Length: 458
Image (cartoon, rainbow, N blue to C red; front, side, top):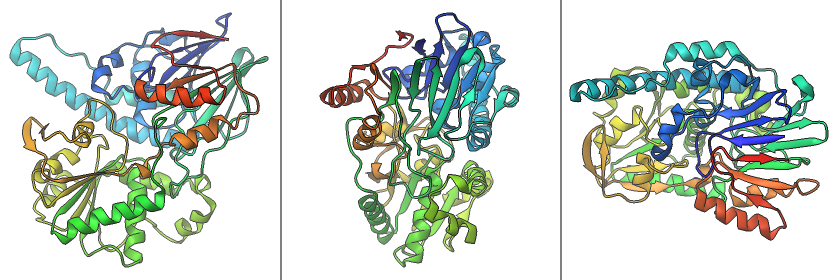
């Protein structure tokens, strides 16, 4: 078998890996994600392979850096099957439609700019119609620990990756050869979805490395840090801004705020969920209780575990604008999580320059994003074309991450029954991969960090 990586190779986003056998009988792709780091955005327009020849796309989960180029793939001739779990299909539909809108709006803005300056017109990656067309190719038939036969003797089997609702890692077999792709592995201390399962064995293992160089603080410590940041800010009559991914993170944050409220720990305030996308995702959550940790299912059956009296659901743009009239003691949860766009940018404009306010980051911030600049203590940032001083308190709480930390990644890979011939590191900053590579080599693993388009055979 031969594997080439056309994304998440020496970088974090754009996950995309193509597997073929030496007879070219079948072409199987694992993920087809959007590059979200500024330095790699041009690669969104380069597939590096012929999409017409891809027979299957196995989608590990619904995050946009794993599914975000599917409409572009279909637009360029893909006619195969997209195999995934039911929740991954449901979430992908919602997230891709939202992404299609954002891409088209950005395109219109760039087009106007190019026409004014008499420059070359930008290329439209895809729009909502391309997204809708892509749904015809989804086949959400995959279930954990049940083999699924593909053509030409290939067999796939997925297991729970514990990352987000319906996420999986996948083993692909043909004859005596096999490879495992980790997708994204989850933080075991997350409150709702089940923990990751473990791999059995394979000739080659491709594993993510997002936090391969560090460990998270414990979830309990992170909860305490989160609560302290909120209470300190509210005590000073400030506002708390939480840039949040609509999938998983927004639900986790609401779950914790509801818990704080019920324990009498959350000071009186207004909590705004300003994300129509997160509302749609929450609806999908309650339809898929079998993917939750056993002790959480009764709570979901009893009622809505995300709701509490301080919560205000914001549905339209006008309501969103009104939030900025609230002078203090508000918690505002909005997307996007890395500040790529979305309603959170408008709230930042009104709040980031005030010392009494706080911004709490609860997820990974990729290189080149506005979120990364703020986390790295940039004193001035550009938001929607205007320059603002960063006077608000900035908090980063990685214990809420949906990604496994170094210890958990090591726990997962060392669970294999026999050492693979090779472990390939993907989906991480290159300097992080080097740290994790050393840790694996100490355990006797043969480790490689693939380049973009490099051919790995076994």
